[in-house]
Image 1 (cartoon, rainbow, N blue to C red):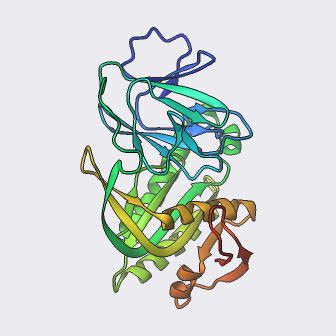
Image 2 (cartoon, rainbow, N blue to C red):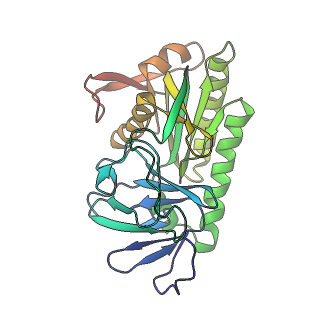
Length: 290
């Protein structure tokens, strides 16, 4: 998606700000402070990676909150899971209000219920791993413009290849990072441990610098009420995103929960970094790093 303030209005889908700025929607895109987002918004209440407009198909766009500190609002209501967008919808991110335009698609049709755009179909125990570039804004300032996309794409592909090589499942709802899942099995812990070792080696290259966090817990798999596509949901997914923010606040390039550490101890050395209460969670927890 590209900013085009003087757009002619011929786009089929676009997002418009109250100040007249206009972005044509050409694919899934991020919203936030980081320069790697397609919609870059400055503001104290805007997270670095705040939200995502995910293109599910040519005529279907979903709004996803990326565990932002201040939330993402659709037509005045804070969203807690991916929501299908329709023409004229108002998206609030921090102090900004954006309007989603998709003329002729979904006109006169009600939104799916706010609390059930996805149907949970099963619960699985397993491993969650989230990797994100440390500070994409600073990195992009130090990389020639013609090489920025190449640097990010190369890192993303290297990381995803590690996950795929060790039988992990990738989720696509991220802009400058990736989310992976391994269902519990006899081989899963060893597969995750090997993935962690290879990600630590990739970190040494620092092209670009990134952090990753690991957790073990129960997740829900949801099915889109519209497309039938599967995605990860639930409190443990939210916990993982909060862990990434804690890792950043503590200056850690890795972080793992006590549940993950207990299972990975036979494979990897870890050390305790402290006890913290994650934003949105009540109980303090002990966290570790590699």
